Image (cartoon, rainbow, N blue to C red):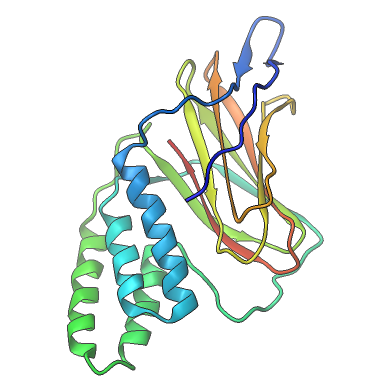
Length: 226
């Protein structure tokens, strides 16, 4: 868990009469779905790093208990980096997590118990219904070394939108938000595997969310807007 670093930011114009507000964040209750999402991400990273079947099962179960829809976004990969190799690969994709958990379970003495739990979650994944448009959205992907991915999304007017990035822990990730005209709105550039910002648009408009990888290996990450 990490603490957001957001100072009082200047107003950026969308045009002559509309603008975005990104101000110092006051303490507000975190929705239960986001708390579960954070725990799921932490459990997934731990499970991959420690070959823990139970941690991967726990991560998948938490992901499936949240109401999420995929970003309706255009993703653009930029940079000269490559998908360099590393010792372990973390995934935030439920289907991939369950597949990897099944592979690890096959090596365990109590594999039948694990495989039964995984089978139940696989059925739950197939049966899951998606939340309505406007609910919590997420996307997961890979950003190469010294590169960046851009997600183009629409945010609603006068609604506070929190945007958070959870990385696999191997590199420092930064998050930037720009308006439809390329004006910088807000960023989180702390040295951290995660990043978080929030904005309040004055009009419903399109924004670019840029995830930048400052490390020498690729990073599997998840970005969430809520």
